[in-house]
Length: 198
Image 1 (spheres, helix red, strand yellow):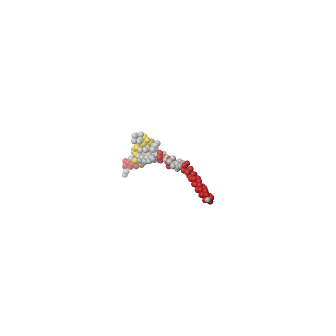
Image 2 (image 1 turned 90 degrees about the vertical axis):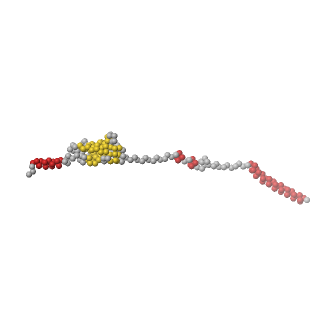
């Protein structure tokens, strides 16, 4: 037969088995960014997911390498098993520490700490465009000036003056020739009239 003591021990073990799920703690299941992770983009949200629902008083605190607090947060209004912290400005290059205080329904407080690093690669600087020189900026006058406007255009040659002496010689020559012809004709006629007179 079962003794009363054995019955009591069996009942106590059953109570412990039933009470175990109720007494479970809200332990950190997943952190974003993860512990030890190096992120190459600025961080706008830090979050943690827990094994049980969280109650009021649960907090996330984020500090930078100097220990200054850069963000804090609490339970996600849409998910009782998640805490979020949103910094006012994105977290850039540096190492950050997250301190989690998770309070469960049984009043137990579970604390966790993790760190992550932000290392945003430097963007290449743009190549500067060459500054145009005065010779490149404006064309030379000789390149744009029309032939009539070019200062180096050859002037039109003016006719050479006529020599007065050569002009008068050209006029007198026909007159002298005409007089010679008249004189020869007069002499011929004179000789002919003399011949008839004899």
